[in-house]
Image 1 (cartoon, one colour):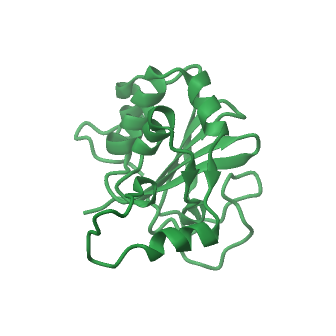
Image 2: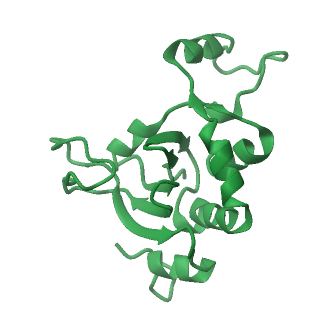
Image 3: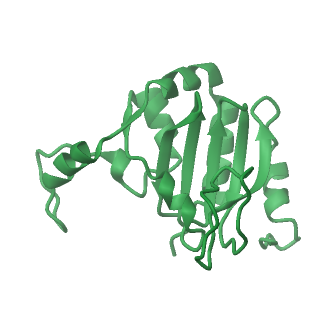
Length: 189
């Protein structure tokens, strides 16, 4: 079963990355992968590479998608991994090591926490790595990152669960213990 989520990177007051993910976006899946990535790369280089990222325009996306026929694999048509739901935390590696700079903006996915179960934000302005949780039925406040006014929907935007300094990231064990503190490894809400 898929656990959908969102990974965003903020730089200079705007999202430079907002990648949708279809599978295993929970902390013991993608969360740990993002944490390990952040602990093992030069953050200054990543930040510089992120600065060059731009989102596709609606017209650019339409042009790219017009080349594909649903349910088929067309040889000779470029593969756009950045548009695929299975490219989640891997988007960071594609930016840093693969020179990917054009992306799709999926930031609106954070607005429905019934479907967006987990979110991760690397904020180079605040120097934080933030983890957000879905299934939120309470309205956010103006101080919350994904606040866009009062919602009449049952499920509200994803809500901050934990924030870490990029300069003092937790160990994998500390990270997982926060989200799964019971001895059976079950998530505690």
